[in-house]
Amino acid sequence: MHQEPHRAYLRQLKAEGTLLAAGPQDPRFGGLFLLKVPDESPQAALDAIRDGDPFYQQGVAQYEMLPWNVVIGKEELDRL
Image 1 (cartoon, rainbow, N blue to C red):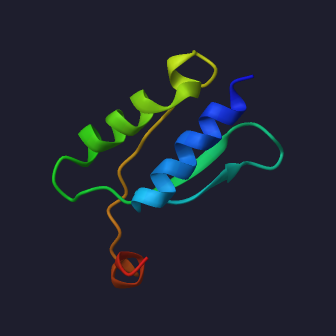
Image 2 (cartoon, rainbow, N blue to C red; image 1 turned 45 degrees about the vertical axis):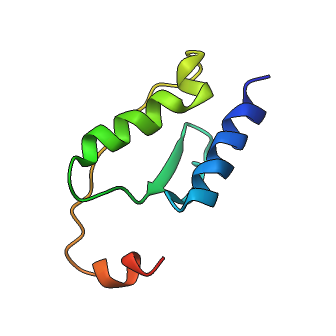
C-alpha cells in the first residue's frame, strides 16, 4: 500500500541526481539510502528528503539521516 509511493519518490530522487543507491538490508530490518546533498547545510537537505518520503509521512518508517564526511574517495563519488 505504501511501498509504491515510496519507490516512486526514490525514483524521482534518482532522476534528480540526489539518490545514488537505495535498497533494503538483508535480513530485512530496514533500508539504506546513499544520497548526494550539498556540502553547505547537509542536515537540512537530509531532513527535507526524509520529510518528503511517503513512508515517513505515513508513519511507516523512522529515519536516521546522517551526513557523511567523505575523506577518501570523494572525487570518485562526486563523479556519480
